[in-house]
Image 1 (spheres, rainbow, N blue to C red):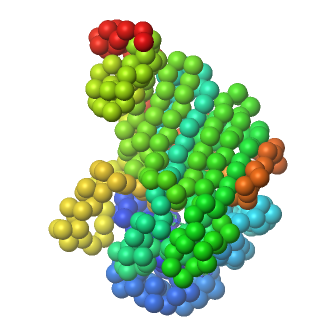
Image 2: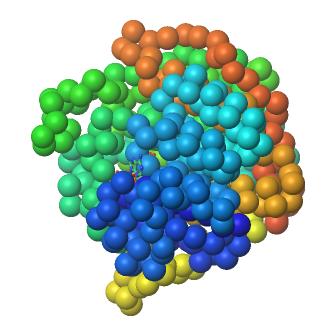
Image 3: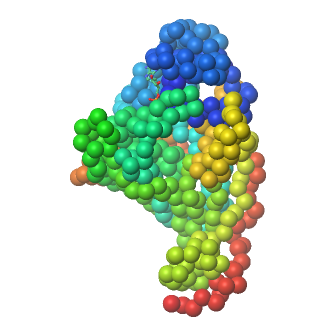
Length: 429
Ligand SMILES: NC(=O)c1ccc[n+]([C@@H]2O[C@H](COP(=O)([O-])OP(=O)(O)OC[C@H]3O[C@@H](n4cnc5c(N)ncnc54)[C@H](O)[C@@H]3O)[C@@H](O)[C@H]2O)c1
């Protein structure tokens, strides 16, 4: 399908890392209100530039508008595109007001076009693997989810010196003003709600703990840099999601069930290994030994943390495995190779690819409008909970989504794990 992109900032270049894995998506042009940014990306990638958003929306070739503008512009840009009869894929959060988000879906319905929203990590192999293992009973009945999104102390991370491939500065002021909850909560909400359905209650807290996060901004900007959301689902599962730019990086995802735990070190690398621990008396006892806490590899011999399970693959898995950059020096390729294996490797375009596939095949929207509205409501509730906290029943809900589309390889049965020999040796301490 033919797409046009609005917003040529930092994340634009992250999207571009995997564009070549999606030949079915053709970029017909881009627009940014900053002519400098537009010129930079057009020079680098060879894209056509539009002189205005109106010119872009008047172009009959454009089928999908990908909205990569700042959060404050999401509503206005998406509204204009939907009203012009274009499908829209927006960066998250969809808007900063549930009423505005509802309005966008109403316009989409009226114009018979579709509105989708990031994040796309629901389509990662890591999330597919967790979802399929839980669905196949690998941990028994799921009871509890712990999801961390600590992204390191923002004021110490040196973001002032981070630039994208085409020279866009990492938007430090924007990230501080909008806050880590708007920016990050969706990455965990998307997989947790896809697995367990709509939250029937939310208890949330948010606060701004740290001052002077960026030079040139007031000491406190009035936006939380720490939040915690406790969700409760109708099947009896509870989830706790933490976001901060206060604590050092920790992106762990853990689902604990009656019989075991499934975990991954983070969502930001789409093929992050997934581990399964089937609880045994040995593995639970071994945790008490300090030596195993200090030396996780040793602990794993006694069953602590379980073992890696084969990752599911999706129709676009190769996007995060191979060098997809449009232009790369050999030095850059080495850096990218290490990054893909050790830091992060996302395929941000896979959400647009899934959207295009559903439109072309006339399939219903897997991430349904009701689902996306629910995520938006939970994000807004958590961001705005404040230090006194809130305990509320969300106003939005959605029908279960079912299995994540596009999975190629499913796991073998994971419920018949045999204990490791050493597990049996651990005394009951
Ligand atoms: N920075 C990241 O690492 C990152 C990662 C994932 C998602 N995101 C999301 O992507 C979006 C963009 O983030 P970013 O980091 O690229 O920000 P950015 O500030 O670097 O870029 C945003 C661009 O949008 C343009 N823009 C804003 N309003 C516009 C409008 N009305 N019309 C045309 N152009 C407009 C700006 O001029 C700017 O070039 C945000 O929603 C953010 O949450 C960012």
